Image (cartoon, rainbow, N blue to C red; front, side, top):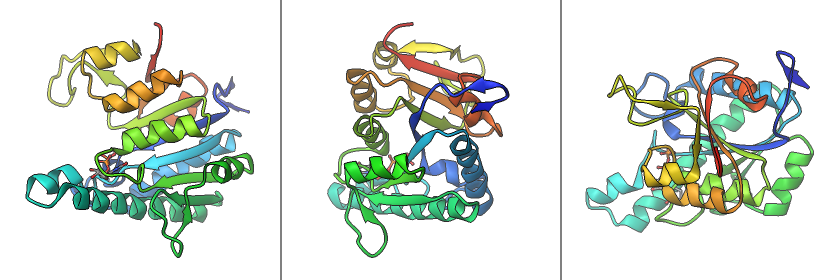
Length: 244
Ligand code: UDP
């Protein structure tokens, strides 16, 4: 299958979205139009025959570190953050199923009446059957992030790539919204990201991807059709891998 005449480069991928990606122009929570648009981007890649899993953050609803800094016990705050990711996962599940994409949500914190528990082999089977699997509740443990959860699930699912959809079209030396002349990179090594402390994913996510040889691709969610292009090796993205 192809997007604009090009072949897919990855047969199985994990897409990481931050919770903020679902806010649209709002400052909190979910924007239905944005969730629907992201679902259609996922569908376009699914239609190419790519096996897809997703990890969604919860920062649009609740961030554990912030609440902890305001006095809530850190473990409790982190569990609240993980529950926020379940809300986002259900929102995206609804949007995907509305446009005819079969999905399963699997939560790292068992929630039998809401979704499946995380079972690695079952998740693989879902993807083989063409279902999009949405992993909720991060790693299920406090003191982690959904970036780390994304890298962990990508490894466990034996994905060919970990793809991060962000607000900008790749990795920059500084936030391009704040530093207009920030340098944009086409390719970086895992080592570059760690040693220069580039703000793309946290260090444990980068290390886990590195140890398991999973390339990380960073692209902008704002350009319609871009996700499908990225999966076909086109479009604008930063590639993070072992060697340049
Ligand atoms: N969280 C956690 N363990 C995990 C993943 C997430 O405790 O494995 C909590 C943590 O409090 C975090 C919140 O869930 O602040 C939301 O996740 P994250 O901040 O990674 O979301 P994003 O920034 O991607 O929206």
